[in-house]
Length: 504
Image 1 (cartoon, rainbow, N blue to C red):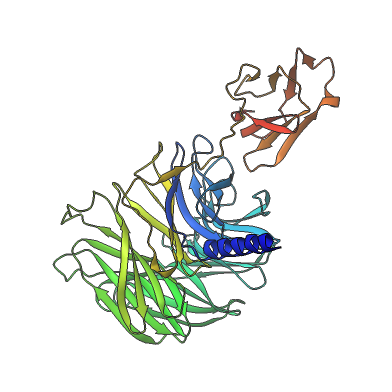
Image 2 (tube, rainbow, N blue to C red; image 1 turned 120 degrees about the horizontal axis):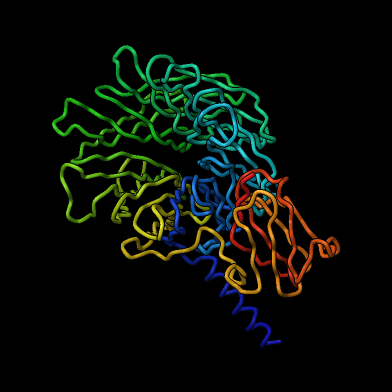
């Protein structure tokens, strides 16, 4: 009994230590393509799912993807989504027992050059449906949130019917992706919605930039919109020069917007930091512009931990005054603030060669935050996804060393790609492929790039006319043009080969 008590005490202490331990990391995920991290969500078990765009899954155009990692950044699974052209996932949203919703844009389906794009998967990434939204022009989604009814509200920009100018574009859907209402807002000049946040269950706050005809300049804007499409108020902000809001956070009754200001009256004519704080009626509480050498633009913001705590990410580009401390390209810095009153409490930087760009920063359930983005420093491809976890109590990860590299595209350790007992030919093909497996197997499955099974050939379906020395001839004329995976299942193990290309 005493031994059992000792074991129980040891387990309890271990769980307590593990539960209270700080988790912080900086890791990259990439293969040999151009990989961009844009959005992230945390699940109940403290794992994460990332979205963005990647050309590592297939050669050619980029596709949207989902990447799941555990609480310390280890790869779990990843899947690509989309068609023959280009897709980008901007935001991923999660509902327990429902799955993932990904908002972005596509030019594989829809009416225009690009269209707003929303698809849903189950909890392991299998696509359930996809839909596009928009007209004959270009529509792009910059941000999205899931509402209390599991519907989605997406915001971005559209130039359908505007003779080239951008209009604010808002799409509200139900949980099945069906459109409930759409808004195009704008007149002369470019008007763009960059971000959206919940104020409460029935009201959202949208931020971005609009063209002000009275001054002929771009101004920051905030808008309060009910989820039924009713606009409560919309205000523009900014005095001299151009302004924009790139991201917002809501902390109690205070809305904080971050972005940049371009003032052509200053000697250093470049972007400077812009922060604005308003109440829930849009009335200005405070406004800040910080002038620095080089371009400095606030890009992301989130609350974290206790009230009045903020993380702000900002991009720095010292194009006219090079800083020997940092390599060439845009650098990404994260600063923490106490917002009541506002004062700086420290921070850190991601300052690799090339560009370091943030896609989204969110609070995490341990009182810290997580930042997803992309840079050009590491990996075999042109860009790589990074995930940067800030621990509780402002524990910052080490970003000055070469980060741990992880695969973005799943690599099968038992792959028969290069084994002599498994081959597929011809590839590409427009009619038939031959699959040769010189070992016992149960069935062959062909899946599309979203993981959906499109052909399945079981052992009992093999007939003498089509089987010769373990060679199976499979007719693929029913498949649309594109790339597919061929899997051979033997003794309950799946062996996956290189993608075949159908060229009907």
